[in-house]
Length: 158
Image (cartoon, rainbow, N blue to C red; front, top):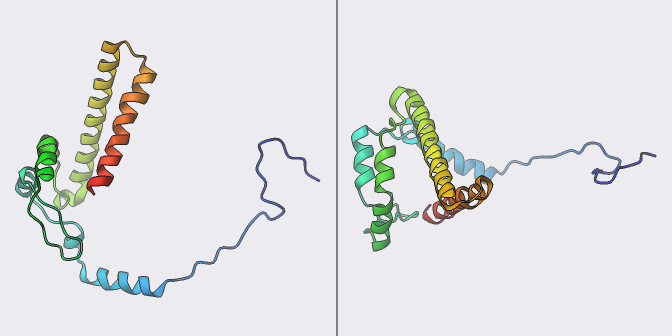
């Protein structure tokens, strides 16, 4: 008999299990119907720099998921646009996905995220230093709180 130490997990005498994956034919048929109608251009939307900047400064209303119609922008849409227009314009500098096989967009997005992360870290450090807060407390309270609120806002908006 094998002796277990405290905290070690044990799954009984069986060391393996068998998993059977059953195909959902209705879901497969629906996915095939949708994917047959799509082309690569539909998947990677062909946009230009001009369209990216135009989209960045344009206020758009809510899109109805069933009909695809765009409603008139509300006051909340205008408010969110005013708060985010600077970031939209900054990130419109990143090349469109159709250019350079998508590599320009990929590298540009990584650089943009890196610069934004550096700016958040620098801001949090300076706020913590000015307020006399330890770095670990600043990291948990400011940086993590910012990430948490970003996740909530992105969930609500999208």
